[in-house]
Length: 171
Image 1 (cartoon, rainbow, N blue to C red):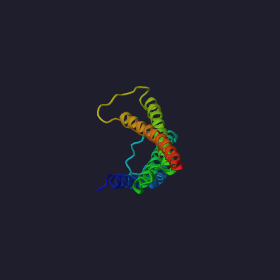
Image 2: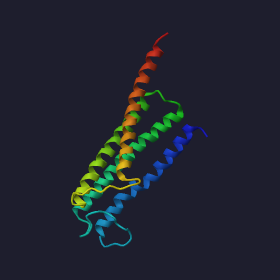
Image 3: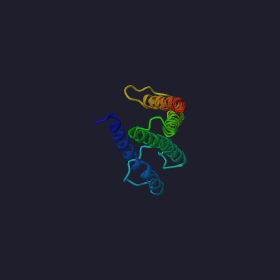
Image 4: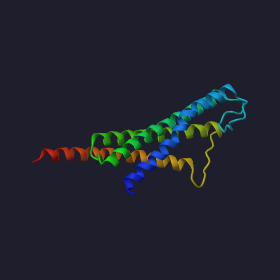
């Protein structure tokens, strides 16, 4: 199997697995708000000790907004994989897709770092804990690296496109 096809297949699979989260998450939160004593969903959200109040709602909405940033970045990555499969590597569309994916991933990672830091301060009385293994910090750092990588790729594709257009004008 061609690597481009495999890349597109894996990206599509991950993208389609994220769609139910985007579709059903707001309804689930609304259900929990309307029926706080429900037992269908096991809620593991900070600030819900005294019911699902304003802090828990703000936590949940912020988390969902960060997930949407990641989802939109992944959508741009999916478009990039499609262009790569079609062989349109040096086009303005590739520059735009990689730039948008890089911006979405970078903003998502930086926002998540801020979110995790504020959440740690509010829930742990200002104490940070260090975990070993695969921690959120490592995953967010990786996401930040991927975002910056896509911004670099976008710049490289933009320069390559300019060189290609200049070369096409030369006889």
